[in-house]
Image (cartoon, rainbow, N blue to C red; front, side):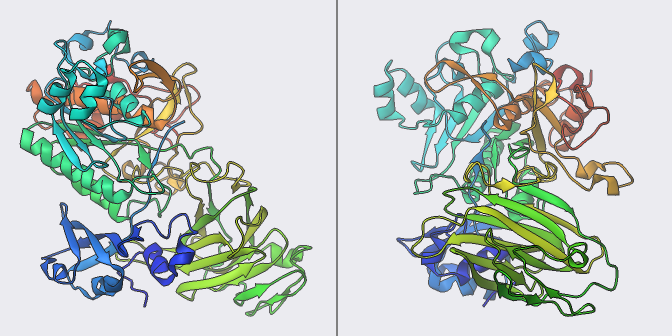
Length: 619
């Protein structure tokens, strides 16, 4: 039985057999096939002790959040437990991949450079780990600047004493015997170097922003087949980070350079709300990359026709193909005729068409459709060969269809305790015995029945996991921020090209309906907050050299390092003991400099402008 305590995706996963879930990109995330357990995120009050009596492992985090490991047979218990307010399944996180200090107004020639170095501030990099051997992360005497390194893959914590012991061996091979943590991708090493690298073998010209800060490193993720870390591991990492900062009595600037596309993108998911709660603990700043979905073709947004209190009728749910008609009831009573040849003009003018190209050899793709719950319209899905289904959006829960050689799992969501909008979730899977989806153009037709705002948004999975050909035909680049950069209280960072001083088109953009707020963007709706260099940035690699990197992953650590400098000036140097959290965001926004081609600020592409450390200090 579906529960409104569970998010839509979890309800669909629980309603779907394991064999079908395994063919999906998302539905099996959080399920342990060997142990037959689910890992879930819950918001709760009171005590969860009674759950431990049911073989449920309870891992309490902070601010009323917990991660539970639940036997599949006991999942219904969660909805029956009064203390549990809401349950979500974990999602996969994707790193935002695709010389910046000068562009950020922080150079060796600046008077700030010698006075502000990040000393006394903790910079936390939650990422793929770090090459602790690199000179960039050592002091002048050769000892490490890393106070703690928690490797979630190894499930071990290493302190500075152990890392220094490893470094003292003089050999990487011997060092690995003492501290076996490695950065297999080099992503975390590059991010750490931009935020806080000391320059290493490259000298001061290659130094990061907060070059003398202490480091707290979390290597994110646990070993599993799909190789992507989950949102649950991020929540554990954030809890660990703020607890360590409080224990060390140090202000902390936290860097997150990853995200995902699942959700309403309005700050209402448990992960987004968790980040907002974490930002209020201790003296912290959280910087999150806006993602690289701006030009990936993974989003469409717009409005269907607004009917007011009366509509054009409604389509009757069902499937058809070729010239067979799915009938429409209501005022017109007309039939949908020959969908292969197109729908007659009178019917078409009341519909909104969204076309999705599914590339060759695509093994599965899911599509989220988010709309206002107050709006009612039929959704018609046409396959490349003209077979179609008509979705009854008023029938909540799971529905299953087949079009050509593609199985369609559909879930009609309802509003949740933290969410007023409605999700209609489509998971396209190859039918049993087939390896790939039907390629070609899939078409969504939206027929208004009773609409007040008419607003809708479609999202595909991250461009990292879908075929490059799989994209919307006419995508909308706005509202392409990845989650959790949509959390209200974090500093959301986009990317620009410092050579051309221009917005980088891959960078995730902000909100589509900003003009509805007094014809301007209100303060709470501004995302990203600002941009930083994110194209061909020189960063340390895992082997001790330097390489160019591109993406919002590498714009974010510029801002994280800048936040550390502001906190050094304010908290460590005694100029402003309250310079953390939203106050750091306000100063960075105020100091942002203009970007070529942008005439109005803030805007959905660059927020308040480009990072400028020099202008952001209240001197």
